[in-house]
Length: 288
Image (cartoon, rainbow, N blue to C red):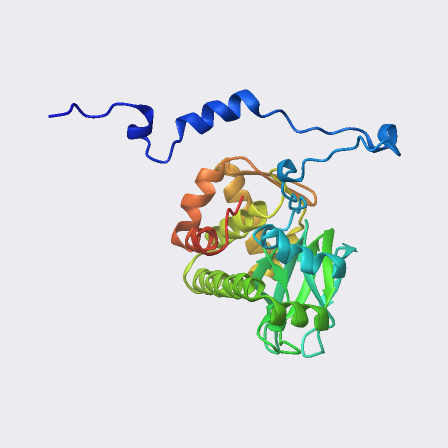
């Protein structure tokens, strides 16, 4: 009986050892000469088979980052960078939506206006997402306002151009529809927290959502805006902030909250935080 073959080719059937050795000996590095120095000499050689593939542009928006290069290239000529100032209403409830926004930084609050209780927040959008998802669903207007809460920068695209891109690319449509699914999970958990949790836990959840979408641990927000977003009276929000501060979870100063202990905030928020973030990573990509 022949002894088992212990050659590299046998251990790795796809390895052609002779070709590998030949390549190591005979193949030279790619030749890249300066076109200016070789102009008119016929000496400029470019090894096309060694050119690196096109690199995806570095983008801060996580939805755009999840797109393949060719799909992002389809959108890129239509994207326009715009500044978002605090208080800007970039989507107005029940009016035609003219632009979609992909945030690079900053925070935008989706709010629903109640005749009895005034506006309250149903979702928080940052560089993880886009506004308005109504356009993805083929809807021309929405009952929600989109109001800037933390200034930043966004890439915007005309509503018609986005619809056309979605019609042309099934990949783009799938990614955006997956974001719609995740946003539904987020809004459901915020509704659950508003229904069952105390102000301290709801505040912890909001701070976690905000910090996930901003760089660093500092969140520029006032007590007045927090009370609006949480649907709570301002004195109650002030008390909740003091409790979190006494628990060494946060530090506060005028117009700013700094997160000190994220783990404690997560424990306080309970099961209202974490599921939607995991769903985002499962369906779209890294959340961080």
